[in-house]
Image (spheres, rainbow, N blue to C red):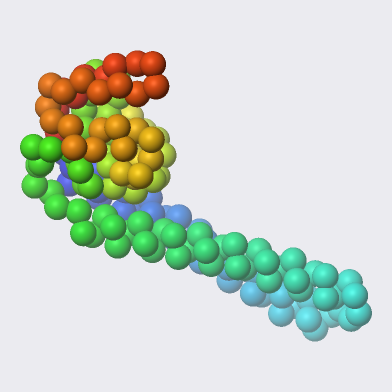
Length: 147
């Protein structure tokens, strides 16, 4: 898979996630407003506080997804000779995209682990080149290709 297609797939998944989070937030706002009209006393305050906390958690997730989209927009599609931010790394064990911590992305062409450069694997791979062997935990990994 080309890096361009991978980034496009990540953008689509992030957009879906953002849409779901915004719908969740809208539902929470609606719930908070309807609770305010029908309740009174301590039960009301507890319910509103729980909704408020959930709204803050949801907003944090929205902010994180927006930052991930910004990072994707800054990634160059030009292949690098040395592994760094934005590299798609094919190894003898797995494939990694160093950019955003999205987890495993299951694609028709195979699975790719989307990790940040600050992750343990990202730190091990960073600065390596094609045909280098790196040690991760007790295992050696050979870098086959960098896209």
